[in-house]
Length: 90
Image (cartoon, rainbow, N blue to C red; front, side, top):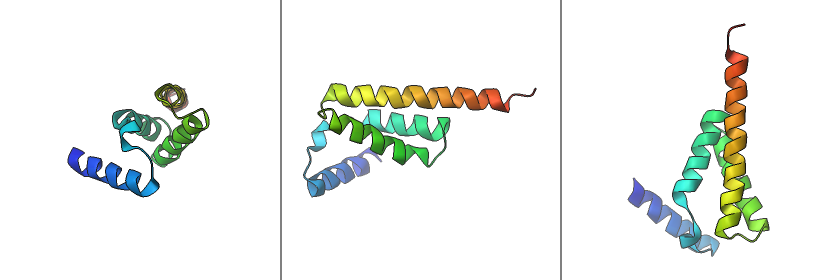
């Protein structure tokens, strides 16, 4: 599967005229996983889009991506914890 993802990222990055090497694929997949499990499955693509958008607005460098990703992961974890509390028997 990693070869499929690498090929897809390269193809899409080329079509979008962006540098594929700037992508931290594992970080993006981790953010998507945390959003999907901590919030809801449809939150994954929305979260990763917003992380990329926020990072891009802040310059798009590695630190901007890491900061936006950390914010999203923190919020997803908090949301998951809130859901566990709400689901606990009274």
